[in-house]
Structures are given as structure tokens and as C-alpha cells.
Image 1 (cartoon, rainbow, N blue to C red):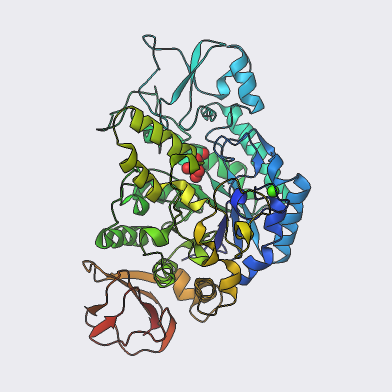
Image 2 (image 1 turned 30 degrees about the horizontal axis):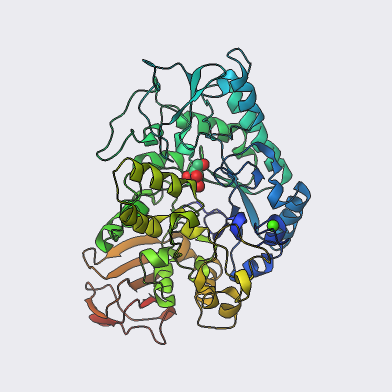
Length: 557
Ligand code: GLC
Ligand code: CA
């Protein structure tokens, strides 16, 4: 397998609004991030992906961009950005930017021109259609509720927005749009950034003719996921690769909602003609995460194993995986797969970090930060949660209380509460009133406390990262072959990694019960080393292995 720095990296995702506020306005900012680089260096990560920091009216917290070459007022200035980049580079940390080019803000200059008249030269930068029988041009729904079409009185036509109506979709079929996007990307690359995470990049090529799509039961509109993996998406990414990406030593990861194995093999092909890797979402959809998000079902472990194993095996040698469970759109994994306890956080981390692919740690995950008890809908800030609550209750499709419980479990805001730095007011995030509530458990879970406790989740992540990045097992952890054991077991996620003479055995009891598992013959063997465990001692390897609840261990055998 071809070696590459981005395969050997561990990425840390920052949601700038919620990371650290340097000036007391209640909103995290760039100076706040720069001030915490030493902390990140201590954790051991070598790449930061920042959610968008560009100028934005914040309808969707920066995923609605009004100017790709300016910094959001609340986050600081371009000088602050340059300083962050420099300070990160001095610590050997690379910076990956969020690239949101499926859509812009409706306050972007392009859109303001585009909507001004039918013959404006930017008219075709966006997707405009006439009304059909006095209604929307098709039955697609926005990912944030309601129709995906907005009527615009000025020219009496509709424009397409797969997300909020303040996020009009760009028309990638227009070569001039591609030119502009590639120019902007080049500008950032010339500035010295180290890569792009590409927002909903699988949605940029819309199906020809924008046809109606089936409407699922209990839904009001067709899912705009119909725009995923469209007819020209690979062609456009190959063009982007030729014209921009291939000219720089950068890393790229596509957020590819709706991606299948076959599609991922194209997006992240190892010939390097498109992107380095993609985020796939099947595993975080196993509890109704994509099509029917607002549920409280638990993910079944055999299903999770089957899914992650499929991605491990199918992409091996031909593409590259990214490994994650948390990001700014997902609830906290320790509340989802675990029981909010530090020991369960460590077990989940081990299960993920010993797999093949580039791991992503989302801010606070390394502390075991949990979902937040928000209470009433008024305490939420996320457009997706708020719109869904109103749409589904007003249409009588869901009961408010029951829906609110599901929103509490799944809302993206769970990931967006302020980073918990210490036990002072506002968790040390800000001296002002934070833009979103602080998780009340910040006195128990915070950086200061964890740095003072060698058994903390923080030091466990630090160890996992150093095993991957600089240990005698780095190669087998990064490049080794993956093999699942015990596919049917309801409690234990077990697998091996193999490279040359080295073989690792990973055992994770992802259940809140003590268990005894019988390993398949030949799986164990003589223990040469114990790489990591989350209990005082690792379980003894024998034909039958006894594991306490949430216990995990990695052995060299
Ligand atoms: C992606 C982002 C999400 C955002 C959406 C629209 O899914 O991760 O936060 O709301 O795209 O840009
Ligand atoms: Ca601030």
C-alpha cells in the first residue's frame, strides 16, 4: 500500500464557535484556537480541521458563506487567521479548511446579483426554475425541513436550496462557477493551508431534469438526498483535482452523504484522481440517522460490526477510509454507544482508533464529553432541530414531548455546547454569556481536571494517538490488514490487524455487562505486548476471555 502523510495522521476537528472565546463575547474565535494549540500538541494530533470561519450571516453557523475570502466578524480577522496558521505550522500541526461549495449564503455577492434580474450575468450561477402549475418545480424537500425551493418575488421564479433558504445551491454545470470555485481554492492553497474538508460534496451535481422523487412514509417531501452522487460529480472532482488539488501537498476529505462502497472507491480512489478519503455515514445511520433521524433506537452491535467491517475490507488497497463517530452534526458517541462513563469513552475510542483509516477526533471527544440535557426547544440553537420540531409537530406527525426526547438524543447541538476547559463559570470557555448553553456536567468533565489525572480519557486518547503516530506498531495500526472476529457477538467487538510478522488483537466489550467470550481458534496466541487497556489490567488471553463491562485491550500476539 502506498504510504502518505495523511494516512498516518490524526485529525482534530474544531467547531470554532464553541471552542474557546478570547474576548468575552460568548462566541469562540480564532485567537481562542491559537491560544489552545499547545493543548492540541499535547494531545498529539497533527492536523486540525476547522468548521467554516468565513464571513457568514450564520443561518447555519458558517455553513452559509457570504465571502469565501474573508473571515467571519465574530471569529476575528485575516491577520488572526494567518497567525493561527503560522503558530500551528510551528508546532507541526496542519490546518484543513472547510470548503462549502455546494451552496453559498443568499448574502453572497454572486447570489445577490443572480437574483437581481433574469439577464444578470450571474443568473446561471444558481439553479432557477419557473413555477410548475403554480407550485414548486418539483417535490424535493430541504434537509432542514420544508420545500427545497424558494419563490423569489423579484424575478418571479424559484431557486433551489437543499439546505436552508439562505443557502442557495450553486449550479456546478456552469463552467464559470467551477472556475470561480477553483480560483478561490487556489487562493487558499497559495496562502499555505494544508487541505480541504468538502461539505456535502456528493451533492454538487444534480440529476438531469430535476425530476420528482419518491416521498417516504411520514414525510412531507422527497428526500433531497436524491442529489447525492449525481451524473457529473466525479467529472467535476477530477477537474478540481487536475486544476487545483494535484498542484499542492494537501489532504482532502469529502463529506459524501449517501455514498456507497462503489461510489467511495471512485471518490477516494488510490490513483489519486479525486479526493484522498471520504466520510461515509452508514454507521451513524444505523439508529435511523439519515432518512429518519428523530428516533431513540440504539445501534445494534452486530450491525455496527458488519457495517464498519464492510468499509474496512472493501476500501483496503483501492481507496482510504476516514474513521469517526463524532462531528459537529452528530450527538456525542459516549452517549450513543456508551453510558456516558469515562471507561465506555475509552472502549469506544479503542474500537475506532485501531482500525485502518485516518481517525478524526471531534473537540471534547478526547474528554468524554456527553450529550447535553437541553430541556425545552427554546434552548436549542440548531436550525435543523428547531425546524424539524415545528414542522413535524405542526403537521401533527409527531407529539411534541416524544419528539423532544428524540431531539435531545440526536440533535446536532449536543456536539456544539462549549468546550469544557475547567470548572470555572461557563466551563472556562468564555467570560461572557455563551451563545449556547454549557453542559451542566462541566465540573466533572473538563480539561483541567483531566490533565491532572493520569487515568483520564484525555491521556487515553493521547496514548492511542501516539501508538498510531510514533510507536513500534505504527505501521501495523496504519497499514495492516483488518479481520473481524466474532461477528455475531452482541457485546464484544473483536478484530485483528496484521502486517508482515506483526499481529494485533483488539478486544472491546462494548456493553454494560461483564462477559465471557470464546475466541476463535488461533486468534489469541502468545501475548508479546499489551499496547493499551482501560482497566488496571488487561483481560487474560485464554480460550475463554473474561471481560468486565466496557473493558478493552489491544495485544500484540
Ligand atoms: C454539512 C455540514 C452541516 C451543514 C450542511 C449544510 O452536512 O456538516 O453542518 O449544515 O452540510 O452546509
Ligand atoms: Ca469571541
